[in-house]
Image 1 (cartoon, rainbow, N blue to C red):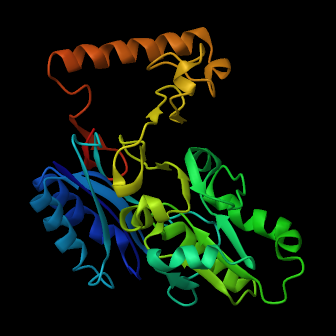
Image 2: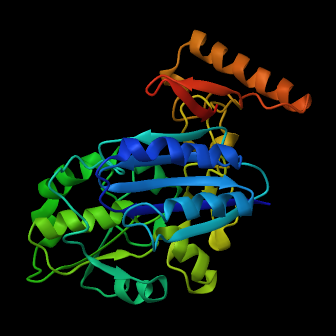
Length: 318
């Protein structure tokens, strides 16, 4: 079995670039794949590999400034869910576009999964899903508000535009927010605190921790949870769900979508079929054909080490 470790940590890295190469080397040495983002505000990402190799990389990360008590959300996969290993430098580990927001200085209250139901069941609690629109379509908490944002960077403008309607009639509104692993909702609570709200809460460990710890019989979750790897979506117990990924647009595809005449495996889905021309679809079809041929030969269609243009060295497993 492959260990899949999702992690993030807001910390203060004076020189993220100096941390990149040793971290990448630790991943490559153990055959660990996935993507890790480094910025002045910390680290974020998901990695996968043999359990011992992943633990070695996590031990390395825990030596970084402010990361000694790094928490990890583990799950398991039958096959490697990533094709590459990447350690990238970013301006933010989760892009909100609000440079003055610092979750280390001012953040909302953490709510454990076991306590989450009681909070969102309250009639005076405003529950907001901070994820992207395509993620929300796969599943969400019953009754949660969907901002219908295409990216997290749209969240501040959405809140400011809808603040009056959201908070109408509430002198001291309770706002509870959630996301996949906790990083977006944690940063979102810091943003709402900066906007003057006091009672702001976020799901500690995100949806993944909730699905891991809360029994399905007691759950307020509806549907599946989109994840950014080859598993596509997970359900309670972090078992792999029923969604697949469209190779044309990289959007999640439900079992119902796959029954559509617009769905062509490896080529298109109902969401993108009419936005791609014949030449593009032919290219996707050829790529899918080559992937199938490689699989029959027992080979990986991707997997070679490629040069990292940004750093002049090895980016990792392609």
